[in-house]
Image 1 (tube, rainbow, N blue to C red):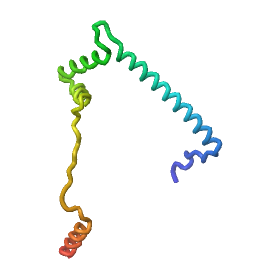
Image 2 (cartoon, helix red, strand yellow; image 1 turned 90 degrees about the vertical axis):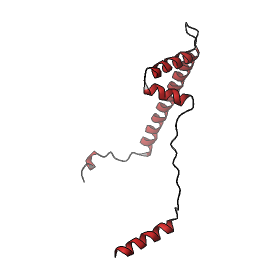
Image 3 (cartoon, helix red, strand yellow; image 1 turned 90 degrees about the horizontal axis):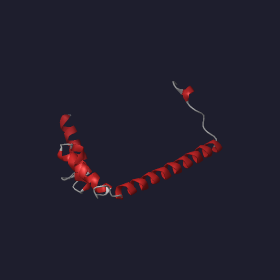
Image 4 (cartoon, helix red, strand yellow; image 1 turned 135 degrees about the vertical axis):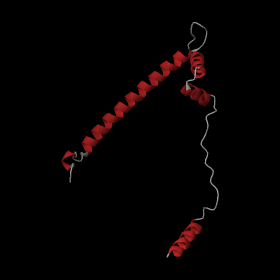
Length: 113
């Protein structure tokens, strides 16, 4: 079978444990870095600028300006942020009885014979 020589052998329990531990440590580090970035962004968003607006307010105004210029993605982001995001609704109706569907199929097959 082609490609069998590319397969790596099954790892021992010790190897698997070691790799799992390293992955867990890396995952924790990534989580901590993400939390640090999130905290830094929160500080920036709450800080007031020279015009007296918070970072959040300045971003909202900038997004609004972009939407007014015709940026569809900016418009969609504004719409979603204010809670007007459209939802996809699917309404199903009719007879969903599986027995009726099977019986109808049998009748069609019988007519074809």
